[in-house]
Length: 156
Image 1 (cartoon, helix red, strand yellow):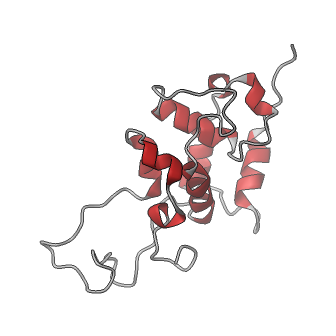
Image 2: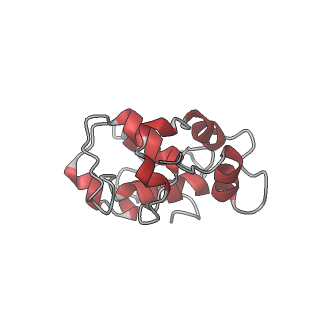
């Protein structure tokens, strides 16, 4: 059997950055992509599977963070949560991997009033925190509203 044909790092960065070119240079997203090139963690069949609409670097990051998950080749999703597609979209529109806050740099807990210091919600770490916590069945059915920051023009 021949070796899987995974995209090169240059091809992955080009796909992630879109236009303008070099938009990812030096960003957290570029570092994240470069840090998740361990394609030997992925089954060779995934290299040719066009049904899984996730870049290989995000699949590697997910598998590193969640080795306990079951990844079945007969599952059309490959066993990856559907929310990862939304996370991927958020990551390429926020290459610094930080939620963009309003002018006063606060996120109102109810979306209307500025928070009191006692009422302020703790920082959730943004959507990338999904990779650092235990996966749940709800992750497979999350919506964009669950993962987009809602405080920038791209996510609002």
